[in-house]
Amino acid sequence: MRKFKTESKKLLDLMINSIYTNREIFLRELISNASDAVDKLYFRSLTDPSVAVGRDDLAITVGYDSEARTVTVSDNGIGMTKDELDRNLGTIAHSDSFEFKAAQAEAAAETEPGEAKGLGDLTDVDIIGQFGVGFYSAFMVGGKVRVVSRAIGSDEAWAWESNGVDGYDIKPAERAEHGTDVIVYLKDDTDEESFGTFATEHGLTQLIKRYSNYVRYPIKMEVTKSRKIEAPEPAEGEQPAAPTWESYTEVETINSMIPIWKRKKSEVSQEEYNEFYKTDFHDFEDPARTISVHAEGSLNYDALMFVPSRAPWDMYSKDYQRGLALYSANVLIMDKCEELLPDYFGFVRGVVDSSDLTLNISRETLQHNGQLRAIARRLEKKIKADLASMRDDDREAYERFFEQFGRTLKFGIYQSYGMAKDTLADLLLFYSAKQQKMVTLDEYLADAPAGSDAIFYAAGDSRERLASMPLVTTVLAKGYDVLLCDADVDEFCMMAMGTYGEHAVDGDDESKQPYFIKNVGAEDLGLTTEEEKKEAEEATESNAELFAAMGEALQGKVERVVVSTRLTDAPAVVTSEGGVSLAMVQVLKSQPGA
Ligand code: ADP
Ligand code: MG
Image: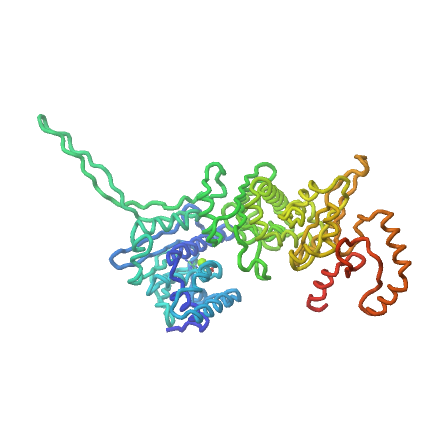
């Protein structure tokens, strides 16, 4: 017997003993693997003339034996050699993200011994699909799993067998054709799942429809049907006998196969979209938005995109991989094609399917693929338009969205040095000190006093503190609104924007000027009249001695002391000159390496 590697053993323990809530996904995982195996073979057949398989011959078959309590998932895909069985099923993919989650689960299990608490969190992230350990989910329901496989082009078959505890055996076996059978010997405690015993026709068909409906290869299963047998014509003078029913079995394709993204939006219910999203993108919540695109013309493609309701737990970590799944003529090219999404829409999940892309497209050629870039540009416009209509039509939902992903949008403006401003600026929300709610920049301007030529904001780490800052109350007292920016990225975003929109100067439509975005803590706000300025200068001059003394007392701490035109109630304020506010200086100082 070959022993499992230590990490694998720990992982197996965790999988088998901890994740009980959703055991039924084992079927989805095995079917996905079967579909992958068939896809791989199909892909090979396109490039290798010695592999002669037709697409129509490829299939997945699900079988069961209620007596023996087994479920079998078979495919006539690429198969595995003895070495591949050893390598692919003997070690579980190592993953830093997994270790992270496993450590969390361990910690949670330690604090609440004997309780399932904490493990609920684990299922929220659905580690099975996410971390490439799908196969092992079979041990959640199986006390023993046997895999019989024959690789394409080989005349040997091998059987891998394990009880999921200590290790596994690989022995010679028989298989007529290339492909793989995964036989799961169900544990005794699997009878009371949502669909009854897994090893039943009803249970399996329900699971296939629910989780694997869009698998693009037929998933076949023998199902029981019944037909009416008409009684023979009655003899003369006799009553006709009642018809009888006869049951028979027939192999049927259970899944719909037609990818949901290829169907017209009007023909798909929101429930179907939600189910697809949750299954394929491993989320437990319905998406906030569903965006479906069917493009025909110079560029043919279908896209189905979703805005999640909640940012995934790793969204803001380096490990987060953005991108849309890219299919070409129904063959998966890439799980996460980054080029299809700009960074600032990286939270969008979805699928793009284009028959225009060449089949042998590879990672290297992708970056130079003009078609792909063109698709990406159009999708970006679609996403923008959808978010804008959510902003206008369902403000409550939009504010929830912004809470989750607003930071990404603001970061997008900052990171692009303002280049993404045209796309993103009107999607931003900030807290208005005057209106006491979140407003867009356009709403800010709509509410601004006539003749305004600027947007004012204050940046700091607390809205309450900002609201009571003398620099803010002064501006408010003059009738202008101030946006209170309490997120770390806000000031960077505002500075990267610099200006927003435009307005006519002195009623002259010919000479338009942008609104300048001004930090109340850093800039001359242009709110002082010449007279007030003169007064302040005079006051500074006539008190020159006093200010010199104050400057001396605060030596090294302040640059100079002057009479301010910016204060109403407060006697004094510490401020900076130039573009950088004191709040920004704080942020910069806290950066590593500063
Ligand atoms: P993942 O599917 O994310 O790679 P799994 O744990 O589900 O992870 O499967 C591990 C590996 O085992 C697969 O990547 C594949 O190489 C191999 N494998 C599993 N099932 C099959 C199958 N039916 N046919 C061929 N290879 C398979
Ligand atoms: Mg898998």
